[in-house]
Image (cartoon, rainbow, N blue to C red; front, side, top):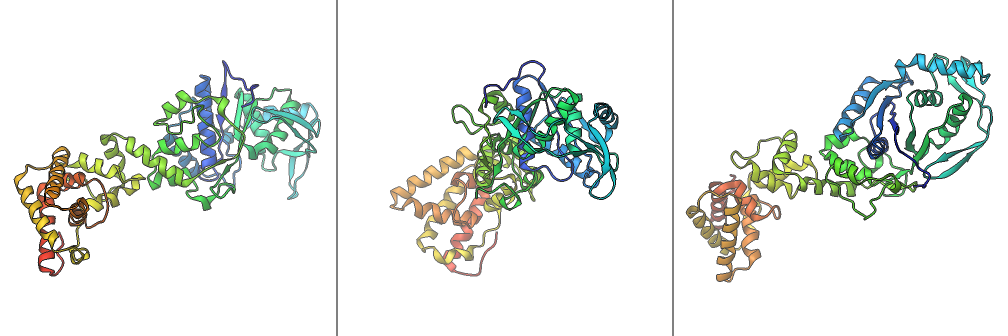
Length: 443
């Protein structure tokens, strides 16, 4: 960041979305950096809903916006304020422009009467904290009050930021052209401009500007698909900011805020990588405590966790989950019905003897918790070694017998989730299928 960037007492930033669609990753990143900036300087964060586009603004988008921000953990000190409820503020600043001779009425493109702003100058420079001096030129007259009486975007933003005492405006670089117009309105009003911070564009993995084709198009979709908010925040934080030590995993928003500094912001493009987000989500899931994991997976499960074995089932699922929405399939991979005909014909007859030994040993043990299950698997490995059975020839058939699948969680987890009797029944079924090669048995 440019060293001229300044904060200090009285820092006030705002997040000002329009309720004309769902909150997308770019908007969420802006909200996050607003939040982190305010936290860093012990300042205030204002939420302002820019709903002057009457034709496109919808209450459902506003409600979804609030839900998304709450889900991300972003709290605001003031607001929400709605531009549609601030007509008196805009009128006050329009009068000032009119009194200074900078406005006139004329027909807009549709032939309706609107109020236009005549800039005191067409060319100029504004300062951006990441880019230095930004030059602009040939700014034309533009509407400040539309024919329906509502303020235009570039005028309302200036009136609001001035009225609310906003000191820093953080937003994407697509607003650079708007900033040129807004700076001229500030100067016509005789008001000081806030510090502008225009973040670099967000790209998809293919190097093109992020869009729907790169994956989830909104934060609401990430919520619905079972991503953790901590993972989404983690990934968004790395889009235009870097930790001085190269750290990329932040367990919580609080941890991120404690280590975030504005000096590490940059104007270069950054890449939103769905695969990287998925990897971060898996890391965050593995970092959850079992109780919290159970609570978060509950809305996604279509059947309850095995009674009395809920914690070990959640722990077993955790290792193979990338998103919370993976929970049903991961659980079914352990507890779902096993179709022995799908593998019994491919196992050697010697596996029947191994199954017989394992079933017999299960008869002799107490019911299996995870610690006991690990001890049981260790015992089986020792028995296999003594009898010249390779580890794969022990564990692969056992996994098939217990789950019907080639891979999955650690073997001890499977025994612990299924329990002594559930494990024994499945192994006996696989043994019978090998010996008789009869019709499939479903447990």
